[in-house]
Image (cartoon, rainbow, N blue to C red; front, side, top):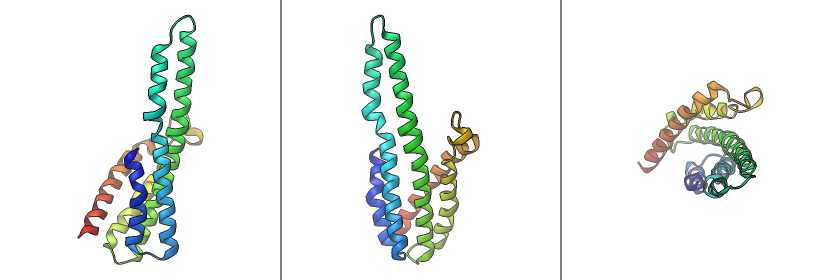
Length: 171
């Protein structure tokens, strides 16, 4: 959750350093900040909601223990679907993919970083956008297998791409 929030200042700083046209810079900052916030919100369930649910699940006693545990399990499933799948993953992938495309476009519109970094960012951003479809429509229950395969690969590529951006900015 903290690393997702760390993207807030980084998204703004990167957009300013790249010096793309003002509209592209502003859009990149807004989308990058939104991506950081929805990912952090999606992850917030783990340190805040899940420990409380686990304590209550473990403490359930008496004749209604099975009913209480069932309600807690339903609450967890609902929070996980809403915060994890809906907000953290779906909106997170959508905004992170869009931000990646905006940064790649910004790189291609300036001479601050090598153009090939922008070219590499484009398919990574598109792959992240494909991830938004993993649990949508007919795939809602079990997920779309192709998206489920692409997302981890895209995030690993995205991580290496971010490291490359950092290295080239330092040089």
